[in-house]
Amino acid sequence: MKDMASWNEGDWIAAIAAAGLALFLVAGGLIATRKSTEVVGHPRGLFVLFYAEMWERFSYYGMRALLILYLTKFWLFADGKANLIYGAYTSLVYITPVLGGYLADRWLGQRKAVLFGGVLLALGHTFMAVEGIHGAADPLVKQADPAINVFWLALALIIVGSGFLKANISVIVGKLYPMTDVRRDPAYTIFYMGVNAGAFFGTVLVGYLGETIGWSKGFGLAGIGMVLGLIIFVFGKTALLGHGEPPKALERKREWTLYGVGASAVAVIWGLIQVQSVIQNLLIVSGVAMLAYTLYEAFKLPKEPRERIFAILFLVALNPVFWGLYEQAGGSLNLYTDRFVDRQGVPTSLFQSINPIYILVLAPMFAALWQWLGKRGTEPSAPAKFGWALVQVGLSFLVFVWGAKSVGPAAMTPVLFVFLIYFIQTTAELCLSPVGISAMTRLAPVHLGSFIMGAWFYMTAVGQFVAGKIGAATGGEGGAMSKDVTLSVYGKIGWVGIALGVLVLAVSPLVKRWMHLDTLKDEEPTQDLL
Image (cartoon, rainbow, N blue to C red; front, side):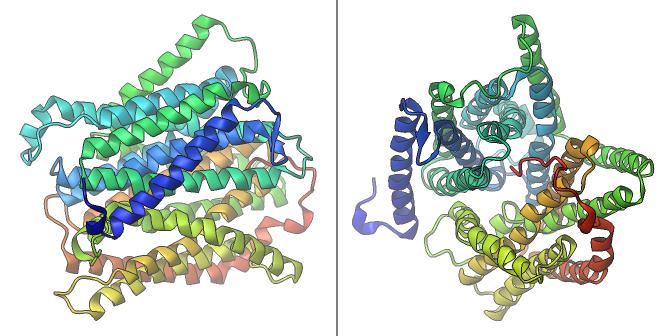
């Protein structure tokens, strides 16, 4: 145990985060066991879900902060291969909610789906703590190590578990409130804060333990976090007021059959995650089929709703471009920070906590900004906001490259530029992610609402895989990351992002006309944003 006098910045950050998390833990336990029906004017169930989701995000983002480092430092995968695995993993996390949401809507109900997903996640994070033969650079030796299959199983459990939990927990939030309840939007704001609080605590504490004490300790803490979330969710069942139960009486045999489908999905994902090229082909084939079906449905509609579908397709097509650039954060940028940034004693994974902090600070400001501009009739349209998002994410890489080169090729990149790239990318995210979800729910025809939302998240998954391919270019399939090559790649994608953003801004007036916002009816059903 370190003497406090010898603590560095990373030690103090972890200690402060641990103290804050302890307060959250005590508060979560008190709320889960409390008998009153409301807390600060909201149903107690909101805070049960808040803490369950916070712990799930704690475990997910904590593991995500370590994953690329674990792949390269423990399993000794080449940098390019590690980025491909990382991209495949994050893309599958965004695809499996289609399965989890479908089974919950039709048969299982959201509460049971969340509970099942939580169990899978707890098992997955626990299995991540199983370490194999350290330093097996030879692929044959690595594959012969039984622990590598435990590792693939852990990833598969986390992917499918996320699909069952993430797809359904936010749905229960909406069910706690009548559709006309003015507390609905504030409730989702509170819930979203839980998401980012979990992301912050997870990246700091799981990352700190994994890097400074041992990989198994970090991943083990992520598993403990998920178990705590499950405990709060189980003890808080009565606070959900019967919401999220199966739509019809569910026979025990049918229920276990559905769990069997989830287990079968784990087996399928276990195989897919090891063969990234197969995932790429599946994404292409499924994407083309999704586009063809959307156009088929569009041409059956009258002019205005048909053109809204064209606007949707335009926005959806930009999704993988943006996330392909943005998601370098957990992959190649994480590796670059580890090797070429003057971190001043702070563990690499802790830098993954910068984005959730920025989100917590900036999200209310952006919400107020759009409202202020809207009252004056000067708020940018959704496609224009997308254009500015692409310009900003491209600019973030150019600023980072300039900062890295300004100190000379042999010097470490100043840590200031890591904070700058995350800051600019966070402002870009706030111009695209919530705006895109809102646009999908406003523009989609009622009978295609769920399908369009599925397409949005599907293309986010494509973006995650694209991010892995870009990250792989910084090192190559068999080579180590090079500072010069990485900065060259970042410079190119920076200019691509800016060029595409300017093009989107140029055509945004046309796309806005396709949206026909003046004839949208208030009574059109909308969907929850989270």
